Length: 74
Image 1: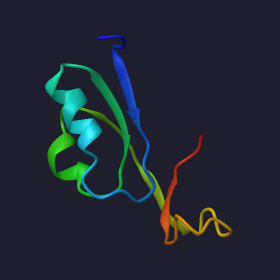
Image 2: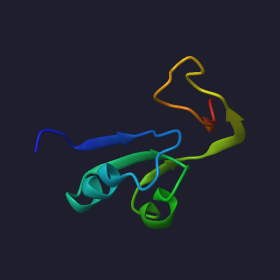
Image 3: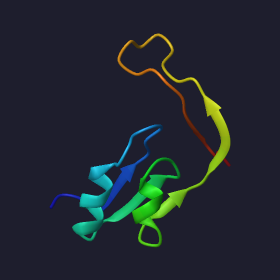
Image 4: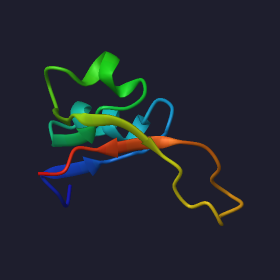
């Protein structure tokens, strides 16, 4: 084990298995409020709430197409 904290700031993933594995290992998990992770991470992870806006990320990238969450910035 080489870390104490895992950041899973996905903008459109499905299940986010790496976050679940981090929780199972007892790591502090910091994640975005997007996707299925909301179903299993609360109250065990720090969830960064989104602004509710959607952005079109990586418009020129043929691998990733779709919309993602726009995390709240303060």
